[in-house]
Amino acid sequence: MKDKIYRIAIAVMMVCLPMTIFAQGGPPATPIDGGLSLLLAAGGAYGIRQIAKSRKK
Image (cartoon, rainbow, N blue to C red; front, top):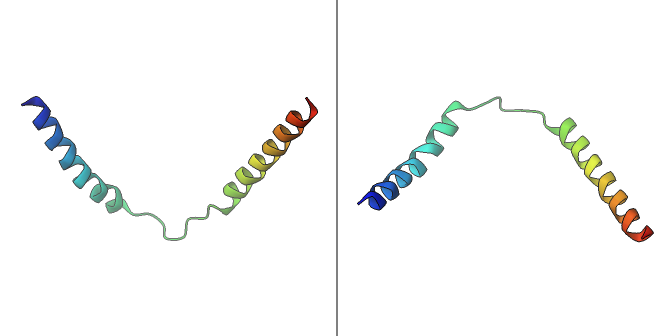
């Protein structure tokens, strides 16, 4: 019986949760370019460093 209640509760949460998440909204033009560019550059530099380390061994 408990298993059935848990399944129903999870199903109800999965149906209702997206509605509450999107209800808040946000600014339509959120700039993410600056931080994203830095993360991509840092990831590329780290990858090049790891490749250089593996070739050195």
